[in-house]
Length: 361
Image (tube, rainbow, N blue to C red):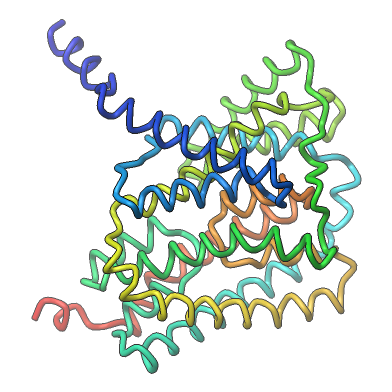
């Protein structure tokens, strides 16, 4: 009995941890609300991310704990699935071609960024390759530790790429007219109370099932699959209330911004040129592939750009939601890239990275 009580006590967050989370979400809400009031595209996620990131760099100990992260990802998945309709499946025939090109684009951008970091900034091969690999940040971190790579430098390059894309992409798409700035996806009507209950139950059930089989990003994709099926078949009309979707977007933005909490300003400034140069290479390579697909297929340009953007999977899917971009197309491609990077990166690092004996010396 005492062991059970001790376990329960450990599971209850301390007052300090609770205040830290509340501060993080409050700062994120303020930033997101400000950007939304300014009518900036993707304002909720971009504003919350920038506000929390700035506060974290200023020294505030901000964080979003795992259980809240999981809840946010489920809400995001439900919201993404709620905009699915039969019409959104029209480009399924193009998936094998575009996913194949995405794998090639990922390899080329990783190689280009890696060579840039090695030849311009003098990085070792392992650190340069891991920094240039888009997505799968947790796997990249584990490999960096195992191979003795420069983890702080890799973290700066990876984090800045996500921050820049999440903040700049919606603005660029809106300013160029490629995507709407009015975020029409957030205008989906709310489902009935019974429909919301069915959505929550189905989403949690599928997410837990995917988690059991170790499916990547199981919380988000499980909820998205369940919600997509229920909405695509017409069994449920409407989605989450607008304010709930807003909470999910602010939470995701706050989560991304909180990555700066453990990053020292000196380390950030020391690697910012490498991060910006690596980002430019990755964007240039991705842009070539986006142009090829835009010319040779009927897929919307906005869908291709977000699907090929070398950013974090949750952030890019959140942008797909706010910019009314096909979540099925974007989700399929970011999941494919995640799998590709997860499978290919360890083997490539083993073959071409710095030998382990060099690391130990």
